[in-house]
Image (tube, rainbow, N blue to C red; front, side, top):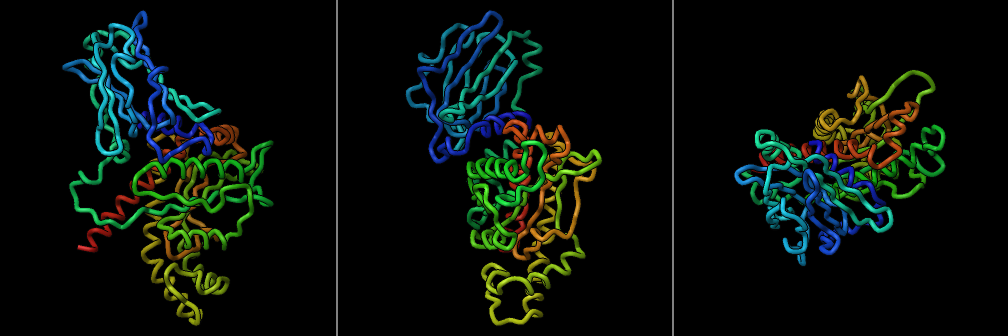
Length: 403
């Protein structure tokens, strides 16, 4: 999982506008090299854009393996890359649809010492850097083997190879709601504003989801503007939301609260939410695909309560997946990470929704993490992994219901 986080951190380290995520990453053959060092090997691969990756070694024969999101290898060969004797040969190919693999045959036992990707703030190009160090054969054998990483497998899975039958329900539409904005900056500490940090985080989550087949990300705002809560719901319904995630980072006047909490609508609030929604909203905006125009409040409320019977457990499931994923990837959690409350942004009946309080601007550690793409990377990774797990679970349930 750490390799996945590293890859996501690199992916998120450059401005959103600098990336072309519809095209394959290309290797700059002239700039890339695999060269001998005194006690090992250095590998530098220059790419047209950052991609998720993982690195490991295998035995019999000794070799280094790098898996990538699909890369265009045209113009790249062993003769252009190899500048030493410690790597005998290198070859490239397709791991599975959408994913590539590079294999380097090693002349001696070499273990991965460092692996990282940096991204240019100027043009969005990326450099993957690896350092391999000489080890004895026993250490090499001990460190070798493809890592057991279910979340990488989930990201790299080829749907055509899935053992269970899968029905096509179209892309999963994930609506990401950066809290506050415009005249409502949210919490503030020094130069840090909740609205700005949540917009950056939301863009990074959307950017990452868009690179995964089967997901479509929609933002309720893409700039520093004020969007009323009711309009956020309307945006979600117009997009055909399958799930709604609202992102916030509070600040406290006193106390040492830190870390993330995930909220769902409290049960008592859910009992009242349908009535409030029926009173406050236009009938045509209450349930996606259901015209409640001309219906009285009792009918509208009954219909929303019926729909909520399905979306409430979905919200609960997603909240638990987020807490679990945050814990796994090392995104700091609050001492009470799972909560429920009467929150207006969670009132929608027709799609599951959660509010993620990703940290507290009043905590120095949280504020520093939220202020950089690298610091936010574990949060992004946790949210993306949780959404994938949640989607897989509910897609399987839909499949069973259709059979």
